[in-house]
Image 1 (cartoon, rainbow, N blue to C red):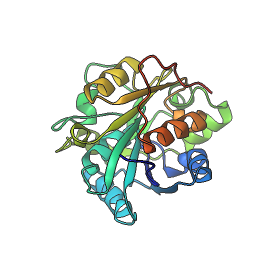
Image 2 (image 1 turned 90 degrees about the vertical axis):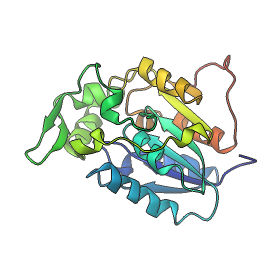
Image 3 (image 1 turned 135 degrees about the vertical axis):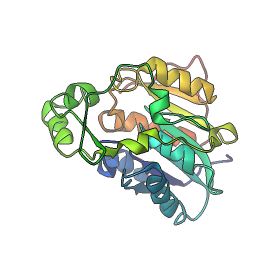
Image 4 (image 1 turned 180 degrees about the horizontal axis):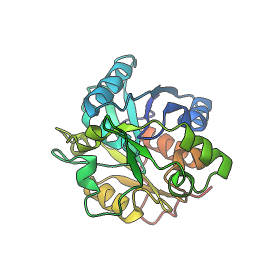
Length: 236
């Protein structure tokens, strides 16, 4: 990427919606970016990819695609669009072709999920604040739990068909206090993708709790910057 990419598309993950990006959106807009936010239906991976494709089709030039958590799976499948020039993963899954979110968490500590009769997965609301968003005020964590958007179990099981991070530059915002996707697993996925890693001291809800640091990382990616290995972690 030469110079500064002006279009940013933000993609949320499971148990959340696009409104969680508001502070990141505000920070990026203040820096002159055109920012769009995808509202994933979370009904299937294919449906979520189509939702991203609709927003990408509305961009007027080179675009940076950003995904949080399960949104990393979505941007991987959607990221081969011609106008996508880079991928930013925030506390996110980074699958290779043939891998799913479920495959990437095999053998790990299972999340406290409560399946519905029709195959959607709720995150146990009693545990949501201390697992998903432990660095947010308790009242905010409780609201996020109550307003969560359950994802179809089939979306987690669906493999991606491509891995555009093999041919496009990528960045990874590693949340060092994450209790959903372990930091060690985040680092392993980021290193496999040869992504530039930016550490941020935050929970899985890092894009809410540490919005400025996440916006800083996206800004650096849009400018084509790759932090040196010796550069200290980004902290609030």
